[in-house]
Length: 299
Image (cartoon, rainbow, N blue to C red):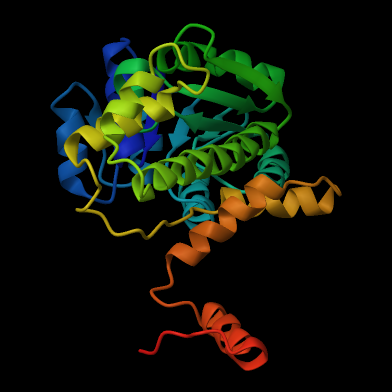
C-alpha cells in the first residue's frame, strides 16, 4: 500500500527498507538529504520537506513518523496537518509517553484524523528479523494500516492493544521489563568477572547458557556476540543512558501503587553509571569513618 515515512534514522531507515522489500509504495523525508537519497536509491520517492511528502499521497493518507519523543513529534504533526484531511492516519512509531499520545489522539480526532501509536521493538535487527509492534488506535485505523504491520512484523509479531495510547503504554512497560532483564544479566556477568577463585571465560559461559539453559534468551545471544568481540569489554565505558521509558514505567508503578523494585533499582543503577565518583558514596564513607573509625580512601 501507499504510505510515507518521516525520519530515516536507524529504526525509520531500516523499516523503510523492509517496507520497500515488501512492495509498498513509499514516500520518505528526513532532515538529512543524504538519508533521503539513500532510500530513493532503494525505490522510495523522496521529498524536500514533510509537507512535500503529504502532497504526494492520495487519500486516505497514511504517514508514519519515526522521530524522538516529545517536541519533535508535536512539530512533525504540525507540519503534516495542513496537507491532511478527514480519514487520514498518522502513525507514531517512536517511544512517546502514552499521556502525550492520548492528548495528541484527542486533538487529531477533532479534525477527523486518526492517530495510531505503534510501540516498536526490534532495534537494528528488525530489518531482517521483523519488528514486534504493539499498536493502539481505533479498529478502523488499525484495519486500514494492517498491511503495513504485516510487512514490518514477523508472523504473529503485531497486535491491536486498544485505543490510542495503548500501544505506547504496552511498549513503555516492555522497556521497563527490559531494564530489569539487562540489569540481572549485567550483575551476573560482573560477579563472574570478579571471581577470585576462577579465571572464567565469559564468552564461553554466554555461549553455553544460550544452549539449553533456562536463562537463554535473545538478550544473552547479544551478550555472547559482544563478548566474542571484546572478552572483558575493555573498549567500553560503563556509562548507561536511558531514553525515558524506564522512568515512565516507575512513575506509572507509583501512580498505581504497584511495587516494582527490580525495574526501579535497574533505573537507579543506570543513573549511578553516569557518576565518575559518587558524592553519596563519599558521604557514606565519611560517616562510617566518623562513627566507627572505618578506613577511607583519599583522593
